[in-house]
Length: 479
Image 1: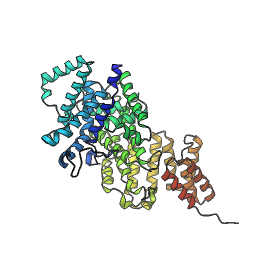
Image 2: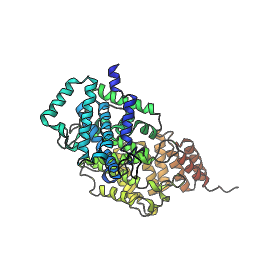
Image 3: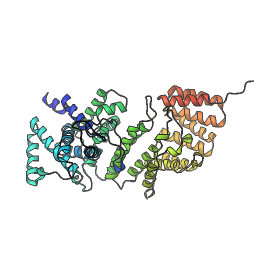
């Protein structure tokens, strides 16, 4: 029973983690450390004039910046040293909570990351000592600190590297472990947002519209799986790295997809999740700058998110790409996304994320909808379909062919997609057929497919869009 309590955070412990996170959140998508919180609660750390006891704006900004840049570093280092994910998270939260109290009084330290790592390491030692179940670990750790003198001041977390590769730091261990293929995909997503992103369980639950208890159990089971299955806390070896990196990128891609087009509810998009995916992708690119696929994923997410302000109108209704006001696209994100693609594909040829980013780049370069190079998009989808056996890729390829070479060509491709049965019940298949039939003037057939799509559409904005399309079909002449 005592071991169970040690592994599962108690109510007071969860409250402490929340207090620390609230004291340092409110981060925006700022440069290379971008990202937006799923919650903008800030506790005492505010940007404006605070009440009694509130940190000065400069301290509040330093706290937020440290949380954005150093949370994953501190947690990753503490997990490596303690081998206990719960202790590491609690100790890291305690370090940030202590910073929220200490920095306003003593000033922001010259190296906030090193200060936080020291505070977190000391807090982790205290917790292990109180538990009394890791005496040998505590003795070994304390002896290392005495001999090396590290107790007086931790190194910058960025200088703490994995044993087998000097250019990998502890954050890579953390990212690869959270996205380990032995974990269910939904658990990988939740664990990545919780431990790497530093988001609260209730925020992740709200983002994916599940009860907080359900999400908490999902995260707890993932941690237990890592412990019980002895999943190693390390960067994969060179022969496994490409495959494992694909798994990491797939997790970020799934988070971004939910942000780009919500799978349920009343909102068309989840901007908070989209920004979190961008922030985490920036981290992976910073850690693995030689990976073209990692850079391409970040480019794709930036180019997609650049359109977020134009994708919905004031009422929250969907605005399709051809009808968007392109002056509302985020020019800075477009420029950054295109710059990431400027070096071209690697000699081995483009990977799936490079091809998807190039598709987004074609849209971004078109000043008007009529300028879109649909044959180029169709060619990119042809290459993507050759690499990825995905019914959604096949659907998008068919749509691109219909817009590049004529509606009937697209309808023929869509018929083959439908015949496979792999998209049965997916609302965008009948919606795509309806749109191409509308372009051909096949009003009755288009209306039937719009009604089918309406019955399947998962979100209110998509249903309202389909209703508008259905209502806008020309009325057939009476006999």
